[in-house]
Length: 249
Image: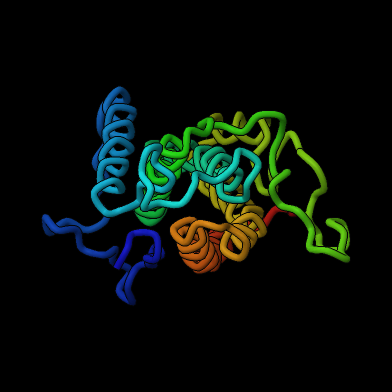
């Protein structure tokens, strides 16, 4: 089963976390802060090479057997750029929680989110490199989400035009509060921000799954939507158990 389709699992009936391959339960390895960026870069490069070996050379120049690369204003390019940005903030929040929580269940959850979304960023950035597209969006977000003919964005609950930020994104103030919190307040705020982040990105994931032209992009968007919907349910459960309430959308 692909990593993207596997949601984070809660502790078993006995309160134990899933057993790691080395026999430990819920033990979180903490490496030096300079190690993770190197691992992230290595993972992205490895995914790019794997994609090439697996036939994901979409629109590679000089290849007559592959379709043309998606245009710069296409759903495929816009989705990969915007979702990379959206995911990167989730990785940032999960990394902080992973390194500062004292709750084993949340340390496991944060580690899982960090690893999964880092892997997905690597895949999307690999596609953008192969397409000759920029790694990041220019001029705002979500302009690639056009309303169907006969409907407008507002009636669909969707933004119109390019926006400075995307649904579910934490503000600078939110992130500062996360970094200064400790103990139970830290855990509750992390769960609130991550839940809002997951649910806020659902409209982009659904649109990508429905409208991207490249099959691999549609499939990844659908996998993300499924796994994050399941994970959002678990986040709500953990939040309620710790006396917290979801933030407004």
